[in-house]
Figure 1 (tube, rainbow, N blue to C red):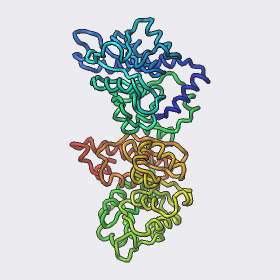
Figure 2 (cartoon, rainbow, N blue to C red):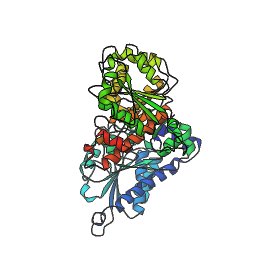
Figure 3 (tube, helix red, strand yellow):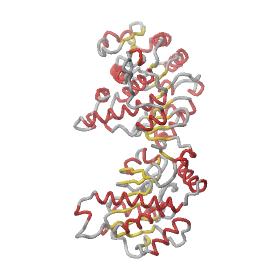
Figure 4 (tube, helix red, strand yellow):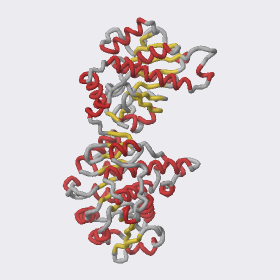
Length: 520
């Protein structure tokens, strides 16, 4: 499913209207009818007592702002009235000077006698007399926090406690980033017209949007292709159409372990051996044919047999059990013949580790996943990552927001302000696939495409969850998937496994990383 920015949606609209000749009034009519249909669906699902007070018709108040969003709301009110609803159009400001399609809809509503009022004039709104609110105040064209009188109306309507059905997106929500400005409606349902807006997929926008329903309004597919939309919601269809993947993947009946690649996991330390264990186990669960777990030689006696399905490979460390004593050359030798390698989970830090990683980078010709400590080594390298030689094999970076901030030289808040663009810019500039972890994980490909993952839950915010993801992606790379494909499929499967594991627990909060591996 596409996720569009406000500017992309404007480009789609312009092409449909100007190039294809579809009248804007037709699109507005379809949009308003779609919103009315969702109000009727919602109302039909409410209790009989709530839906009918002493046999009275449902009563909905439609908040109308200037512009096309308001025009959609007026059409919605007309269709609700035709369905037998009592409807009031509450204009945020005097509508007499409106032109364009919204002005046309205002005139139609007046001619057929739909009741209306202007906010802040006349009697105060008796919110308790109404069953619900349609928010048609501010659409994708709005920028910045709502100004008066819109701000006061949003606050007053929100305080009523009535359910809100939002037209395209809740007023006060940034269409591109999901930032909730002050004030902002919390909708029960958001009817995304023609395509879902990016902000509806990112937090906190997800919690403000409620149930998101995408409704077509008559814009042909060619208009979206012309706009070259490059942001998508991850699902099986997106993986098929954008990444050429079957999900879940199929396995030939005559396959053997050599068919599915060999991954090397360089992870874990004396204090954090569990990170390596989780990472290697997840790589095995990915379907990878063979997994080798590389550890400093001094650690191997304690770890032998902990994961019998993996090959335990030792790197000479002078008996210290510490990665700082392992030459990069030795680890590169262990990677020879492997199709993919994961570096970093639970590895620890030491003086000179950035130079060690750079030497390893130069020696390796396998697909790579850099996670955790390897990302911090990369961020603190004396030479900017932009100057590191590009690899012909896939490279996947899997930072959480703090690690991403260090990689970019920004604050975590700046990264989180627009997660999609933060990830997209870095991936394109450095020629890597970047997985920006967190709620609504973003997978950004080096060609500019970005994918937002809908799976996962707050219970996955637990130690070791990221190690599982790194191993899963590494195992998929070893099986021959490219960087974007392995990252997208791994991220989606990781979140889905977390959802299955959480459903089997008393609470998502009791989830541990091992549960995610077991649910793969």
